Length: 481
Image (cartoon, rainbow, N blue to C red):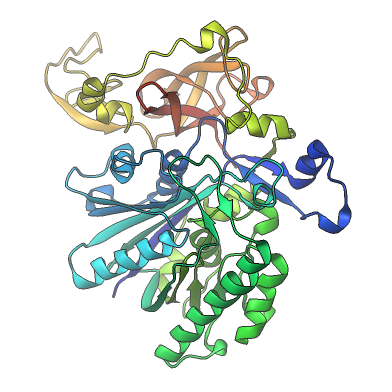
């Protein structure tokens, strides 16, 4: 039996109310306003960091040493030539012999990667494959798509043991339908006429894929507990389900008014939300959109009742902050460049040879643990720092990234440059031992307290434009509920 064995998701802390956008731009015509809000990645987040966060959620309680593959799906990969999936695998401290691959250039790449992972597990070429997907797309300032887009990530672990939702079958369509596109030189997505996208693309391809799937496997609308597909237009989303014969209660909430359309991970994020409320025996139909459509269906097993400890969609929707400012959003996305001052220009990028040698420390936040006295160390050490021990070359590999910590002390620096001032950093004491200084993010200085719980989050430390290098490290964030 091949299927999903675990799930996870990530939604950035910040939300931007669409009315904030309209007010900033002077658009106050109620007839043309979209309701709700959209999720916004922080200035130090991108597709890789969000994918890592979703995968961390997915891997809670799972044995990472058994993961044999990692597929990453996105249309906003930081690198055009570098294995982005390998960066994620290193950050997750997966085995070195993991098979990695990037799926990209279409917003249905998330479901394509998932079906490919199912095929690999079912054929026996891999026993367990992680699929993670994330996007942070840019619409032109003041444009319709800027309001529609949102940022987020999803992760699903596939295998043939402990399956919570069995993969039953799929049906795919691939069309060179040009509705949205972006070249290597484009900062913003380009789109064709809106009604064309809605009526000729979105309104037809999902229906065609779902109809093809049901015909292929002799199924009817009444066979499914939930139906999952993305939303680009709220009214059209309901019309697609009605046209296919599904009842409103069968259609999984699209979350468009809460996070927006997150692109490549969107369908998978809605699937995670469906799995959070699924019961044994439920059948879930999933269909994506983007240059065609992928459709597949799952059957939930009794293992679903054993899933615990995931933040998932529910936890991330419940923990949020209003960004409050359109100007702050365009600053985060570098749409509105700001003067960084002399201190902001002081970038000391990691040398690539050093990054290679210290990749487990830098990307994976892994250190060492003394085999003699059990003292954890970060960075990795050859000699135990405990004064009464001093053991030499008797160390085990030790991961800090998934260990909770507490804030020992902190500082708000109003002189150092930060896109979201002030710059905040402090010492973190890890549960089980170990202490290190980290930047703090997704927080306000006034809300911090000595001793408060924090968790680690992989973030973009800098972008060295002269060399085209994205630098990543871990930051501390206050724990979400």
